[in-house]
Length: 103
Image 1 (cartoon, rainbow, N blue to C red):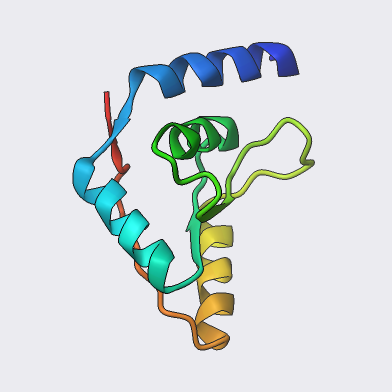
Image 2 (image 1 turned 60 degrees about the vertical axis):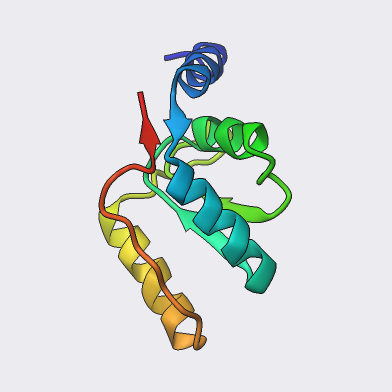
């Protein structure tokens, strides 16, 4: 898929889904207390647009699985390695096993 198509489709997806209200509230409160990083195998552009739409773009950092400019894909194993790294730094880890959005 061409990068332009991926970006366009990502924007379309982001405009049709909503974050769960509880997830938005949690992220907003957590970002006031600590550095918050979403680590996902999902599409970065979708998450960037969602975070922007909910006013969290400047408060929540993102490590995502697929970006058109990166030569890697972030998968389940890599997410675990990132979590272990943060844990090794003494950071708290909160994990969701399911998406935080609704279609």
